[in-house]
Structures are given as C-alpha cells and as structure tokens.
Length: 212
Image (cartoon, rainbow, N blue to C red; front, side, top):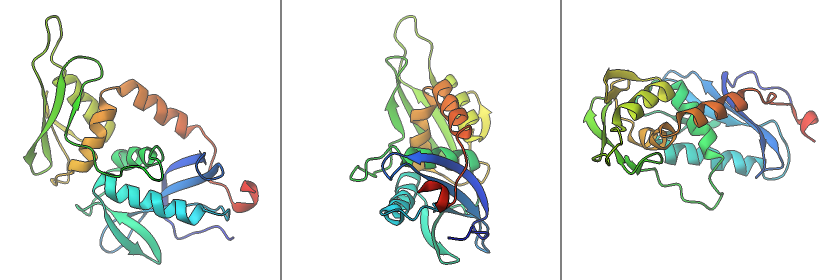
C-alpha cells in the first residue's frame, strides 16, 4: 500500500490499538472548501482494520457532536462550526479508543460529580460558545471547585477565559458534546496532561510492511 499524500496534517496518533491487532491509527486534518475535516486512517491491511476505522469515525461524531461527511473519497467528520479546535479534537480521538466496540456512544452530560470533592460540577451554556462553570455548595473546609475546573478547561481545550468561572470557544459556537467530554478530563488535569505526553512519545504511524 503506497503512503497517502492527500491525508493532510496528522493531528494525533494511537500507536498500538489493543482492540485491533495492536496496529496504529492516526487522526488527520484535511482542508476542504467547506472547512477542515478530520479523517481516521491506518496503513494496516489486517482483518478488521477498516471496520475499526469506521467505528472510531462514528464515535468521533457521536461523542463529540461532529457531522459525518465525505471528503475526497474518505469518510470524515467535521465540527459544526466549520472551524478547528485542535486540543479538543486530539483528546476526543484518544477517548474514542477507550470505548468498547459494543459500548454506549451517547455524549456525556454537562454535569458530573467531582472526583476530588463532594461537589457536583455543572457547565451552564450561556450561548455563543460560552459556558459558566458552577459547583454545588462546598462542604466545610472545601473550596469551591468551579474556578479550578474552569482553569483546567482553558488549558485542556485551549479556549478563552472570560472570568474565573466563564470560558468560551473562540468560534462563538456551542459545543456541548465536546464540553461534556472535557469536563471529565478537567477534574484531573495532571493525569490528562501526562497521558498526552505519553501518547506523543510513542512511535509513528507505520506502513503496512512494518505492522505485519
């Protein structure tokens, strides 16, 4: 299989997928007249690889609120804002590999129990891509977690900080599904950043001859 030269820029890599013969899968950003799209691709010719690509593509759409499109013959996904949010797309791609092939692809809600306190964290949509981070009343001796979660979201998703608890996508469009997913990661920022560093250090997307 020849190396593809029309995939665009590689955004993220899963170097060994244990659910598909430990082959590698890449997420690529491809430019189109209608805006950038994301393409999942693997050079492996092993059985089940095409089906795995189709599943991850469907998971991107379902979990991230993306649109399924066709770009240059490739099944792809596109953000509804027709823009590109690189950090969020990378983390969404990685999270799709955590889902069981028969697992639930329902998007996460904009509310979750905090893993580091007894508080519940809620993302209140304000419109135009803005969200206010709210936390339920803190127990005695606890600080409200909303400001820390907002700072974590700014760093993880690379969005704007309007005040200590309000963040906004620079595209000015809502992304509820992405924010629900990122809310879970924001509760443990250090672990999320460590995972990103580990993933970045793992190999490259290899040609079929190197994956056999």
